[in-house]
Length: 114
Length: 110
Image (tube, rainbow over all chains, first blue to last red):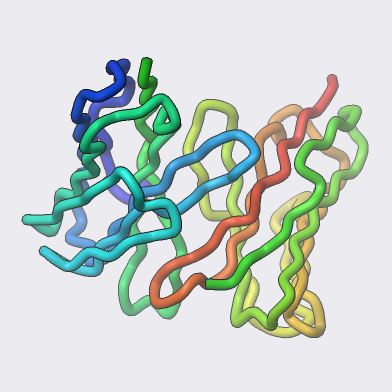
């Protein structure tokens, strides 16, 4: 395990409410990622971070924002949740300098938007 | 980033039968990775292939990287119920990023 925790693990919310998911890592890794997983779509990158305050968009970033004010925490915010954002969200890290982009995932957050 | 097509999306096998999933790219890949996700769990890295024609084995799992580095396969010999899950391939998707295939969901019938 790469020392990654996600909170909450489950959340049910209503359309239009803001939601923040937290990813916490204990090993000082530089690169962190947020993915969503949906049936028929696999894992799709939402946003990623390559350092404190350094973030960039992935392929499905609309409706999401992120922040990384500390190395250990990467927050994903749904500004105004919609039913299409019902999904399982995974945080991941990769290990810099290891000549690889291997992803190590957290346990996931199951989000339901009613 | 690179796009990878993965087939099949679903596979049901009788326990003891073999299973193969395939991953294809239209462009040459610098490497390809394979992950396994158990039901209700998170994806877990299995292996990375880098060299043309590379073959690696992990017990009953055999991973191959094509000579042209555009395709890869994962073969499981004599499946067991512990093999149940979704298997993903992943290709480099830009600096320190990967792009995942859609995954192959394997069901093993005891």
